[in-house]
Image 1 (tube, rainbow, N blue to C red):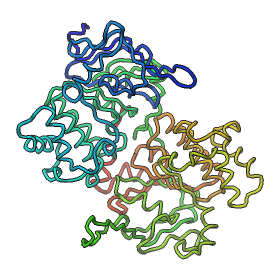
Image 2: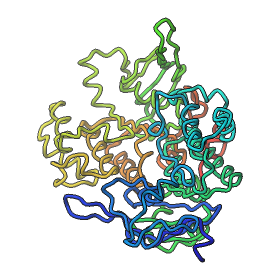
Image 3: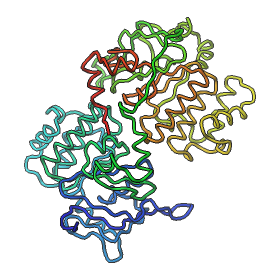
Image 4: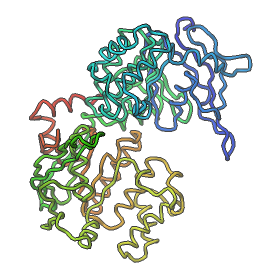
Length: 531
């Protein structure tokens, strides 16, 4: 098709960076086009070059980037000079007005000290809007936010509301192209679906095109007309969404499809009730919200409300719910990282809340926790092997160095990794390191708090397989906390659904998916995308 019919045409795009190890190619001879009014999906795992491709269209690449292309046309206007270099001034003129962008983390994009309304007005003033406040209120209504959002600060809004504010800012200049870079990755399943539907509605209403960048193949397939698949800086496959999903040719695309968790593909088993290892009785957890003004009384948020639960030896119990449901607070209470308002956590007939410091030290060998972001859990200045060795020495384990190496090998790493630092590993490898460290003291219970939610699908599948194999080898009991119902179904024996601090349903996978007891459980099931 001729480029006049396309909103964007890019030919032979190359992006390189100079490093200590020489020039590294991030994007290698990429060519693509975006039609007027279509949604082009760009899918690939971390490091594939998809975000850099999107940033190149809006001129937001770092200054260290070396960018060359045979052609970059926007609405028929060539933005490449005779030396095949981008005209940065020309792209800057398009930024915000003709081309806008939504990033993955709205809290990192919004100013925490300025109300959402004022931040939207700042964007509107770029076009000398005569009635910016009125226009801002109209935009908030367009993205389905209440009028009071205008006076609220970013920290007073949920993740989904913040992303709607970012969408309002992105569309306020009536752009022709909207670049959506991982706009739903950190959102709960139901909120993610709402944001995707909103983008579809706005695209049809306002007539812009969307470059939808994501490692979430389900989200890409839900909104996109065509899909580009990237790997190692190259486009390895392209086609209509239907062609990619039903007749993928490249083995990498086939791998992404095979590893994507869906309710129809997720396997499960049913627990045979055995001896109870952990009992939670009448548990309540509250957090005080301090007010800005000293004379105002702090408010209280109840995270967990009078919860009762029994966990069996050797089972994997999936705990699922949206943000704010209390699932992470529950997990942290078991290892005494949050204070109980009332109730008890009982491990093998011992009330954990009544343990002395010395007794609790011994108890912590029995229950370990793995968090979502491994970089927050690892010491960046300490070799990873030494970190595992340190745990072993703290609990007076003999042959600590040798056992640390054995643990690294157990989770798929090697002895040569012992003296490497956390930044030298990928996200999936860092999570394996955290798992090895958690296993160092031979725990009875492993709590996994959103430990795969930030990982690419192939890495996510590797971690899930690793957890299942370790559970069988070490006879572990696992509490697997997640907002992703398909992932929970894939690994769990039983599933507990939480909402607003309470259990709304608890049972085997069959009972949860075949006989949902509440509209909320059914809504969670319906929100899981099927490829």
